[in-house]
Image (cartoon, rainbow, N blue to C red; front, side, top):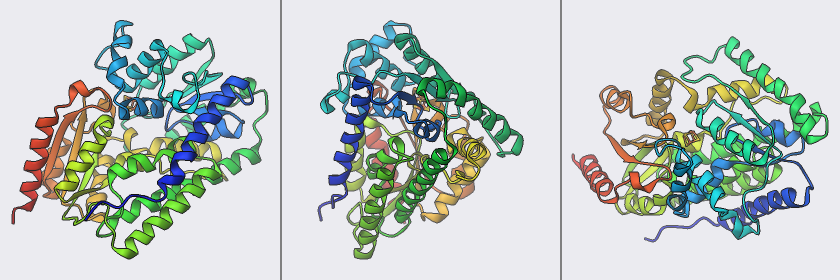
Length: 406
Ligand code: SF4
Protein backbone atom coordinates (compact mmCIF):
# COMPACT_ATOMS: atom_id res chain seq x y z
CA UNK A 1 0.00 0.00 0.00
CA UNK A 2 1.53 3.40 -0.93
CA UNK A 3 2.20 5.95 1.75
CA UNK A 4 -0.59 8.54 2.20
CA UNK A 5 0.52 12.13 1.63
CA UNK A 6 -0.75 14.96 3.84
CA UNK A 7 -3.38 17.20 2.22
CA UNK A 8 -2.44 19.92 4.72
CA UNK A 9 0.94 20.27 3.04
CA UNK A 10 -0.84 22.12 0.24
CA UNK A 11 -1.48 24.86 2.80
CA UNK A 12 1.89 24.48 4.53
CA UNK A 13 3.94 25.40 1.45
CA UNK A 14 2.26 28.78 0.75
CA UNK A 15 2.16 29.55 4.47
CA UNK A 16 5.92 29.14 4.80
CA UNK A 17 6.52 30.93 1.50
CA UNK A 18 4.42 33.92 2.67
CA UNK A 19 6.40 34.03 5.89
CA UNK A 20 9.74 34.13 4.04
CA UNK A 21 8.47 36.72 1.55
CA UNK A 22 7.17 38.85 4.42
CA UNK A 23 10.59 38.75 6.05
CA UNK A 24 12.24 39.74 2.79
CA UNK A 25 9.83 42.63 2.26
CA UNK A 26 10.35 43.92 5.81
CA UNK A 27 14.12 43.91 5.40
CA UNK A 28 14.06 45.41 1.90
CA UNK A 29 11.27 47.99 2.22
CA UNK A 30 11.76 48.72 5.93
CA UNK A 31 8.07 48.06 6.58
CA UNK A 32 8.91 46.49 9.95
CA UNK A 33 12.06 46.03 12.01
CA UNK A 34 13.71 42.62 11.62
CA UNK A 35 14.93 40.58 14.58
CA UNK A 36 16.84 37.33 14.44
CA UNK A 37 15.92 34.93 17.21
CA UNK A 38 17.12 31.53 18.37
CA UNK A 39 14.50 28.87 17.71
CA UNK A 40 13.49 28.58 21.35
CA UNK A 41 14.30 32.21 22.17
CA UNK A 42 11.99 35.08 23.13
CA UNK A 43 9.99 35.17 19.88
CA UNK A 44 6.79 36.29 21.63
CA UNK A 45 8.49 39.38 23.00
CA UNK A 46 9.80 40.25 19.53
CA UNK A 47 6.45 39.72 17.80
CA UNK A 48 4.66 41.80 20.43
CA UNK A 49 7.08 44.64 19.63
CA UNK A 50 6.22 44.44 15.93
CA UNK A 51 9.40 42.72 14.70
CA UNK A 52 9.41 40.36 11.76
CA UNK A 53 11.37 37.42 13.12
CA UNK A 54 13.99 35.35 11.30
CA UNK A 55 15.19 32.08 12.84
CA UNK A 56 18.70 31.20 11.64
CA UNK A 57 18.32 27.57 12.75
CA UNK A 58 15.44 27.25 10.31
CA UNK A 59 17.75 28.64 7.64
CA UNK A 60 20.45 26.16 8.69
CA UNK A 61 17.95 23.29 8.47
CA UNK A 62 17.00 24.42 4.95
CA UNK A 63 20.66 24.30 3.94
CA UNK A 64 20.86 20.80 5.39
CA UNK A 65 17.63 19.52 3.88
CA UNK A 66 18.63 20.83 0.43
CA UNK A 67 22.06 19.21 0.87
CA UNK A 68 23.77 22.53 0.32
CA UNK A 69 25.39 22.71 3.77
CA UNK A 70 28.57 20.88 2.79
CA UNK A 71 29.15 23.34 -0.06
CA UNK A 72 29.40 26.19 2.44
CA UNK A 73 30.99 24.67 5.55
CA UNK A 74 34.57 25.15 4.26
CA UNK A 75 34.08 28.93 4.01
CA UNK A 76 33.30 29.19 7.72
CA UNK A 77 36.09 26.75 8.58
CA UNK A 78 38.54 28.91 6.63
CA UNK A 79 37.49 31.84 8.79
CA UNK A 80 38.50 29.93 11.91
CA UNK A 81 35.21 28.30 12.89
CA UNK A 82 36.08 24.73 13.89
CA UNK A 83 34.63 21.75 11.98
CA UNK A 84 33.60 20.44 15.42
CA UNK A 85 31.17 23.26 16.24
CA UNK A 86 27.50 23.45 15.26
CA UNK A 87 27.15 22.78 11.54
CA UNK A 88 24.02 24.93 11.41
CA UNK A 89 26.23 27.82 12.45
CA UNK A 90 29.07 27.03 10.07
CA UNK A 91 26.91 26.21 7.04
CA UNK A 92 24.79 29.32 7.62
CA UNK A 93 27.82 31.58 8.05
CA UNK A 94 29.48 29.89 5.05
CA UNK A 95 26.42 30.50 2.86
CA UNK A 96 26.39 34.14 3.96
CA UNK A 97 30.07 34.51 3.05
CA UNK A 98 29.29 32.95 -0.33
CA UNK A 99 26.38 35.36 -0.81
CA UNK A 100 23.87 32.52 -1.22
CA UNK A 101 20.69 31.45 0.54
CA UNK A 102 17.85 28.97 -0.01
CA UNK A 103 15.59 31.98 0.53
CA UNK A 104 16.46 33.10 -3.00
CA UNK A 105 13.64 30.82 -4.18
CA UNK A 106 11.23 33.12 -2.31
CA UNK A 107 12.59 36.24 -3.98
CA UNK A 108 15.02 37.26 -1.23
CA UNK A 109 18.57 38.19 -2.17
CA UNK A 110 19.89 36.49 0.93
CA UNK A 111 19.11 36.26 4.62
CA UNK A 112 17.05 39.28 5.75
CA UNK A 113 19.36 41.86 7.29
CA UNK A 114 18.84 42.06 11.04
CA UNK A 115 18.17 45.22 13.02
CA UNK A 116 18.85 43.27 16.20
CA UNK A 117 19.79 39.69 17.12
CA UNK A 118 18.42 38.02 20.24
CA UNK A 119 19.70 34.69 21.53
CA UNK A 120 18.91 32.43 24.44
CA UNK A 121 21.63 30.03 25.59
CA UNK A 122 19.08 27.59 27.03
CA UNK A 123 19.85 25.30 24.07
CA UNK A 124 23.61 25.86 23.69
CA UNK A 125 26.31 28.51 23.65
CA UNK A 126 26.99 28.16 19.92
CA UNK A 127 24.01 30.39 19.22
CA UNK A 128 25.73 33.31 20.93
CA UNK A 129 28.85 32.95 18.76
CA UNK A 130 26.61 32.58 15.71
CA UNK A 131 24.66 35.76 16.44
CA UNK A 132 27.80 37.69 17.33
CA UNK A 133 29.19 36.92 13.87
CA UNK A 134 26.15 38.62 12.31
CA UNK A 135 26.16 41.41 14.88
CA UNK A 136 29.64 42.31 13.60
CA UNK A 137 28.64 41.79 9.95
CA UNK A 138 25.51 43.97 10.17
CA UNK A 139 26.85 46.33 12.87
CA UNK A 140 23.68 45.90 14.93
CA UNK A 141 23.12 45.06 18.59
CA UNK A 142 23.26 41.47 19.85
CA UNK A 143 21.16 40.91 22.94
CA UNK A 144 20.59 37.74 24.85
CA UNK A 145 19.55 35.66 27.77
CA UNK A 146 22.29 33.59 29.37
CA UNK A 147 20.30 30.71 30.71
CA UNK A 148 21.00 27.66 32.83
CA UNK A 149 21.79 24.27 31.35
CA UNK A 150 21.70 20.77 32.84
CA UNK A 151 18.75 21.86 34.94
CA UNK A 152 17.45 19.26 37.40
CA UNK A 153 14.44 20.93 38.95
CA UNK A 154 13.08 24.16 37.52
CA UNK A 155 13.02 26.13 40.76
CA UNK A 156 11.66 29.60 41.53
CA UNK A 157 15.15 31.21 41.88
CA UNK A 158 16.14 29.89 38.42
CA UNK A 159 12.89 31.18 36.94
CA UNK A 160 13.37 34.57 38.62
CA UNK A 161 16.94 34.89 37.32
CA UNK A 162 15.90 34.19 33.72
CA UNK A 163 12.71 36.28 33.96
CA UNK A 164 14.80 39.31 34.99
CA UNK A 165 16.93 38.85 31.89
CA UNK A 166 13.80 38.70 29.71
CA UNK A 167 12.62 41.95 31.33
CA UNK A 168 16.03 43.55 30.76
CA UNK A 169 15.68 42.90 27.03
CA UNK A 170 12.66 45.17 26.78
CA UNK A 171 14.25 48.69 26.87
CA UNK A 172 16.92 48.00 24.20
CA UNK A 173 14.40 46.18 22.03
CA UNK A 174 11.94 49.06 22.36
CA UNK A 175 14.70 51.36 21.21
CA UNK A 176 15.37 49.30 18.07
CA UNK A 177 11.65 48.81 17.38
CA UNK A 178 10.91 52.50 17.96
CA UNK A 179 7.85 51.62 20.01
CA UNK A 180 6.87 50.70 23.56
CA UNK A 181 5.92 47.17 24.54
CA UNK A 182 2.17 47.07 25.12
CA UNK A 183 1.13 44.65 27.88
CA UNK A 184 -2.04 43.79 25.96
CA UNK A 185 -0.06 43.04 22.81
CA UNK A 186 2.34 40.76 24.67
CA UNK A 187 -0.57 39.01 26.31
CA UNK A 188 -2.33 38.48 22.97
CA UNK A 189 0.87 37.13 21.38
CA UNK A 190 1.32 34.71 24.27
CA UNK A 191 -2.30 33.59 23.96
CA UNK A 192 -1.67 32.68 20.34
CA UNK A 193 1.58 30.93 21.27
CA UNK A 194 -0.21 28.91 23.93
CA UNK A 195 -2.89 27.94 21.40
CA UNK A 196 -0.23 26.99 18.84
CA UNK A 197 1.65 24.91 21.43
CA UNK A 198 -1.49 23.05 22.46
CA UNK A 199 -2.50 22.34 18.89
CA UNK A 200 0.98 21.16 17.90
CA UNK A 201 1.13 18.97 21.00
CA UNK A 202 -2.27 17.48 20.12
CA UNK A 203 -0.98 16.76 16.59
CA UNK A 204 2.09 14.98 17.98
CA UNK A 205 0.00 13.02 20.46
CA UNK A 206 -2.09 11.46 17.70
CA UNK A 207 1.04 9.38 17.08
CA UNK A 208 0.21 7.45 20.26
CA UNK A 209 -2.54 5.72 18.29
CA UNK A 210 -2.00 2.49 16.34
CA UNK A 211 -1.17 2.80 13.54
CA UNK A 212 0.42 6.18 14.07
CA UNK A 213 -0.90 8.74 11.58
CA UNK A 214 2.33 10.75 11.83
CA UNK A 215 6.02 9.84 11.81
CA UNK A 216 9.01 11.78 13.13
CA UNK A 217 9.98 12.53 9.54
CA UNK A 218 6.54 14.04 8.85
CA UNK A 219 6.87 15.97 12.11
CA UNK A 220 10.17 17.52 10.99
CA UNK A 221 8.33 19.08 8.03
CA UNK A 222 5.05 19.83 9.79
CA UNK A 223 6.71 21.62 12.70
CA UNK A 224 7.71 24.59 10.48
CA UNK A 225 4.92 26.95 11.60
CA UNK A 226 5.42 26.03 15.29
CA UNK A 227 9.05 27.13 14.93
CA UNK A 228 8.84 30.25 12.79
CA UNK A 229 5.25 31.46 13.25
CA UNK A 230 4.46 30.83 16.88
CA UNK A 231 2.56 33.75 18.34
CA UNK A 232 0.58 34.21 15.11
CA UNK A 233 -2.96 33.26 14.18
CA UNK A 234 -1.68 31.71 10.92
CA UNK A 235 0.23 29.04 12.87
CA UNK A 236 -2.86 28.22 14.96
CA UNK A 237 -5.04 27.98 11.85
CA UNK A 238 -2.55 25.62 10.22
CA UNK A 239 -2.44 23.25 13.19
CA UNK A 240 -6.24 23.18 13.43
CA UNK A 241 -6.21 21.99 9.82
CA UNK A 242 -3.45 19.44 10.40
CA UNK A 243 -5.05 18.12 13.59
CA UNK A 244 -8.36 17.58 11.79
CA UNK A 245 -6.53 15.61 9.09
CA UNK A 246 -4.63 13.54 11.65
CA UNK A 247 -7.86 12.74 13.51
CA UNK A 248 -9.41 11.74 10.23
CA UNK A 249 -6.44 9.43 9.63
CA UNK A 250 -6.87 7.92 13.08
CA UNK A 251 -10.57 7.25 12.42
CA UNK A 252 -9.75 5.68 9.05
CA UNK A 253 -6.84 3.65 10.47
CA UNK A 254 -4.40 5.31 8.03
CA UNK A 255 -0.85 4.88 9.26
CA UNK A 256 2.13 7.06 8.36
CA UNK A 257 3.94 3.77 7.71
CA UNK A 258 1.70 1.30 5.91
CA UNK A 259 1.63 -2.03 7.78
CA UNK A 260 3.23 -0.50 10.91
CA UNK A 261 4.87 -3.27 12.97
CA UNK A 262 7.41 -1.46 15.14
CA UNK A 263 7.13 1.81 17.03
CA UNK A 264 10.29 3.74 17.77
CA UNK A 265 11.59 6.90 19.43
CA UNK A 266 14.16 9.23 17.83
CA UNK A 267 16.47 11.12 20.13
CA UNK A 268 18.41 14.18 19.07
CA UNK A 269 18.70 16.19 15.90
CA UNK A 270 17.33 15.12 12.52
CA UNK A 271 19.88 14.31 9.80
CA UNK A 272 18.40 16.90 7.48
CA UNK A 273 20.06 15.81 4.26
CA UNK A 274 18.94 12.20 4.80
CA UNK A 275 15.41 12.76 6.04
CA UNK A 276 13.78 11.32 2.95
CA UNK A 277 16.17 8.35 2.70
CA UNK A 278 15.79 7.45 6.36
CA UNK A 279 12.03 7.85 6.18
CA UNK A 280 11.97 5.42 3.24
CA UNK A 281 14.29 2.96 4.99
CA UNK A 282 12.21 2.78 8.18
CA UNK A 283 9.05 2.55 6.10
CA UNK A 284 10.41 -0.43 4.15
CA UNK A 285 11.15 -2.08 7.47
CA UNK A 286 7.55 -1.41 8.68
CA UNK A 287 8.94 0.70 11.51
CA UNK A 288 7.40 4.04 12.41
CA UNK A 289 9.26 6.57 14.50
CA UNK A 290 6.28 7.80 16.47
CA UNK A 291 7.94 9.96 19.12
CA UNK A 292 10.85 12.33 19.47
CA UNK A 293 11.94 15.03 21.82
CA UNK A 294 12.99 17.15 18.85
CA UNK A 295 9.50 17.83 17.49
CA UNK A 296 8.23 18.31 21.06
CA UNK A 297 10.72 21.10 21.64
CA UNK A 298 8.21 23.60 20.28
CA UNK A 299 5.55 22.68 22.82
CA UNK A 300 5.78 25.36 25.51
CA UNK A 301 3.38 24.22 28.18
CA UNK A 302 4.48 26.72 30.79
CA UNK A 303 3.55 29.85 28.82
CA UNK A 304 0.92 31.87 30.66
CA UNK A 305 -0.43 35.15 29.23
CA UNK A 306 -1.31 36.28 32.76
CA UNK A 307 2.33 36.00 33.90
CA UNK A 308 4.33 36.70 30.73
CA UNK A 309 7.92 37.11 31.88
CA UNK A 310 8.04 34.40 34.51
CA UNK A 311 6.17 31.98 32.29
CA UNK A 312 8.47 32.67 29.31
CA UNK A 313 11.42 32.05 31.64
CA UNK A 314 9.88 28.82 32.95
CA UNK A 315 9.12 27.59 29.42
CA UNK A 316 12.69 28.29 28.37
CA UNK A 317 14.08 26.40 31.39
CA UNK A 318 11.73 23.42 31.08
CA UNK A 319 12.93 22.71 27.58
CA UNK A 320 14.20 19.12 27.19
CA UNK A 321 17.57 20.20 25.79
CA UNK A 322 18.24 22.39 28.82
CA UNK A 323 17.65 19.62 31.35
CA UNK A 324 19.96 17.29 33.26
CA UNK A 325 20.19 13.58 32.47
CA UNK A 326 17.71 12.61 35.22
CA UNK A 327 14.71 14.63 33.97
CA UNK A 328 15.60 13.72 30.38
CA UNK A 329 15.54 10.01 31.20
CA UNK A 330 12.21 10.34 33.02
CA UNK A 331 10.80 12.19 30.01
CA UNK A 332 11.89 9.42 27.62
CA UNK A 333 10.50 6.81 30.02
CA UNK A 334 7.09 8.52 29.87
CA UNK A 335 7.32 8.41 26.08
CA UNK A 336 8.10 4.70 26.10
CA UNK A 337 4.89 4.11 28.05
CA UNK A 338 2.66 6.70 26.37
CA UNK A 339 3.59 5.78 22.79
CA UNK A 340 4.02 2.04 23.45
CA UNK A 341 7.52 2.02 22.01
CA UNK A 342 9.44 -1.07 20.91
CA UNK A 343 12.85 0.58 20.67
CA UNK A 344 14.88 3.77 21.00
CA UNK A 345 17.09 5.29 18.30
CA UNK A 346 19.69 7.82 19.46
CA UNK A 347 21.34 10.12 16.94
CA UNK A 348 24.83 11.14 18.01
CA UNK A 349 25.20 14.36 16.02
CA UNK A 350 28.90 15.05 15.70
CA UNK A 351 28.63 18.84 15.82
CA UNK A 352 25.79 19.10 18.33
CA UNK A 353 26.81 17.58 21.65
CA UNK A 354 24.12 19.78 23.17
CA UNK A 355 21.33 17.74 21.64
CA UNK A 356 23.06 14.35 21.56
CA UNK A 357 22.24 12.31 24.62
CA UNK A 358 24.66 9.53 23.83
CA UNK A 359 27.81 10.72 25.47
CA UNK A 360 27.31 10.06 29.18
CA UNK A 361 25.83 6.58 29.08
CA UNK A 362 22.13 7.39 28.76
CA UNK A 363 21.32 4.85 26.01
CA UNK A 364 22.87 2.01 28.05
CA UNK A 365 21.10 3.04 31.24
CA UNK A 366 17.73 3.18 29.50
CA UNK A 367 18.33 -0.17 27.80
CA UNK A 368 18.91 -1.83 31.17
CA UNK A 369 16.28 0.02 33.20
CA UNK A 370 13.45 0.00 30.65
CA UNK A 371 14.46 -3.38 29.13
CA UNK A 372 14.13 -1.89 25.67
CA UNK A 373 16.40 -2.28 22.62
CA UNK A 374 18.48 0.80 21.85
CA UNK A 375 20.39 1.81 18.73
CA UNK A 376 22.86 4.67 18.32
CA UNK A 377 23.46 6.17 14.87
CA UNK A 378 26.51 8.35 14.24
CA UNK A 379 25.78 11.32 12.02
CA UNK A 380 25.19 15.02 12.03
CA UNK A 381 22.41 17.52 11.51
CA UNK A 382 24.06 19.15 8.47
CA UNK A 383 27.60 17.89 7.92
CA UNK A 384 27.06 14.74 5.88
CA UNK A 385 30.76 13.86 6.06
CA UNK A 386 29.95 12.61 9.56
CA UNK A 387 27.31 10.19 8.32
CA UNK A 388 27.87 6.81 6.71
CA UNK A 389 24.86 5.71 4.69
CA UNK A 390 25.94 2.07 4.47
CA UNK A 391 26.90 1.73 8.10
CA UNK A 392 23.65 3.31 9.28
CA UNK A 393 21.54 1.19 6.96
CA UNK A 394 23.22 -1.98 8.20
CA UNK A 395 22.76 -0.94 11.84
CA UNK A 396 19.11 0.00 11.38
CA UNK A 397 18.29 -3.21 9.51
CA UNK A 398 20.03 -5.27 12.20
CA UNK A 399 18.16 -3.37 14.90
CA UNK A 400 14.78 -4.03 13.32
CA UNK A 401 15.67 -7.70 12.87
CA UNK A 402 16.41 -7.80 16.58
CA UNK A 403 12.98 -6.29 17.32
CA UNK A 404 11.33 -8.91 15.11
CA UNK A 405 12.85 -11.78 17.06
CA UNK A 406 10.29 -13.57 19.19
S1 SF4 B 1 21.48 23.09 19.83
FE1 SF4 B 1 22.92 22.06 18.47
S2 SF4 B 1 22.10 22.31 16.42
FE2 SF4 B 1 21.06 23.79 17.74
S3 SF4 B 1 22.24 25.67 17.52
FE3 SF4 B 1 23.05 24.60 19.31
S4 SF4 B 1 24.77 23.34 18.58
FE4 SF4 B 1 23.54 24.01 16.79
